[in-house]
Image (tube, rainbow, N blue to C red; front, side, top):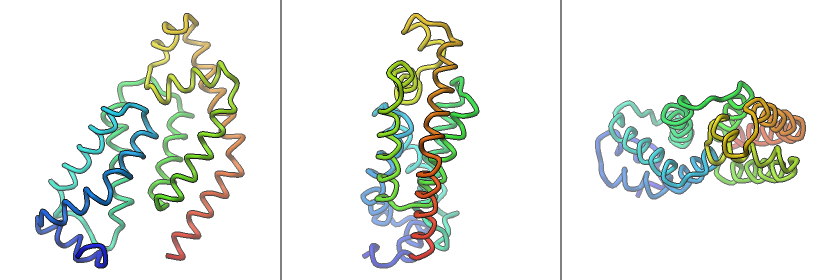
Length: 194
């Protein structure tokens, strides 16, 4: 009923049609959960983020506009929920925010296959980081530990943690610079073609 008519789907949501909401959950839950997991590798927090986004989408459904992509709106909402509920309490570097902003741009401008493609490239580059750098980066990015928690956990100084995280971001930016531009261009061209 909804999969062939986007306007009917959005209008159904706006009017409070529970079937439209069920359709929204069926179509987007797993995609949003995969995106949330890419931001923080914690299943419980990722689930909370997605559930909060879906609840807020229902609460503010009357503000939805059929002219704009619901997928882009939902991905951006997951990103904002992640920042608001989790990252605001963590010490993060400017490079970390730039990394997250880059992820947000990709996810709001691309479909699911393009997003998975981008994350697979990023994951491969993370695996190529020097072992110590990779471990500290993963504790920060995937486990969500603060710099102080990582320093305690590994019995190293906070300055060493900060240096290694900055090194990881710089290496990733260098390695992904050309690929990232190509991916972004690919996403933009494919978006304009659809």
